[in-house]
Image: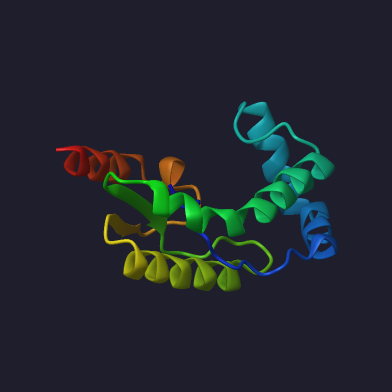
Length: 135
């Protein structure tokens, strides 16, 4: 689900991310999600570490696809998330998906009209795609 692509993502501007997270609306949304027991309980520094670890491993993913022999369903969100560099990230993902599909015929790519969090934003459509793919 919307990840796992061997793609060159733009470098994260952590100063801008931190500025955006300090604004009233994102702070309120973060608080509301914690109250509702949704979202993450990670600190900013922990989230930054997770992203940096992820980004460091992305280049290794191309070789992983070479070793997979079964069909693969990749479901991606077609909309940019409202984050710094969201449009750049979505464009890089689109390019990566196109490239992966061209080099690995066993990969089937499907796009849903949502952002990165496909299971939360489009659960029924995602389930339908998985069921059809499994059949």
